[in-house]
Length: 87
Image (cartoon, rainbow, N blue to C red; front, top):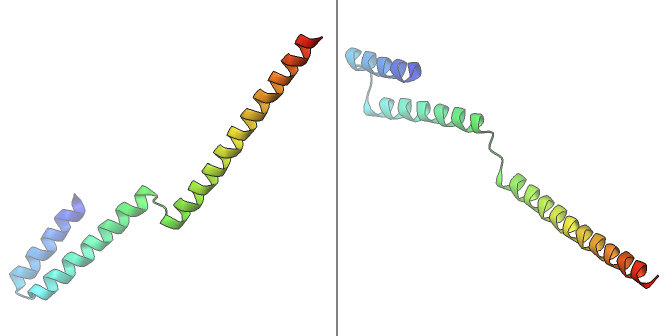
C-alpha cells in the first residue's frame, strides 16, 4: 500500500509542478506496473512451460512404471498361491 501511496504522491507532485505530459504519465505507469507484476511473479515461484512439460513427462513415466510393477507383483502372488494349492 505504501508503494501505491508513494506512486500517487509522485504523480501529484509532477502535476503540481506542471513537469509532466501524458507520455511521461504513461511511461511512469507502465514502469510501475511492470515492476509490480515482476514482484508478484517472483513471489509465486512459477515455472516455464518447458520445465512443466518435462516434469509432466517424468511423472507419467513414473506412474506407468508403478502400474507395471504393481501388476507384476499381483501376478507373482497369483502364481505363488496356485503353487501352494497344487501342493
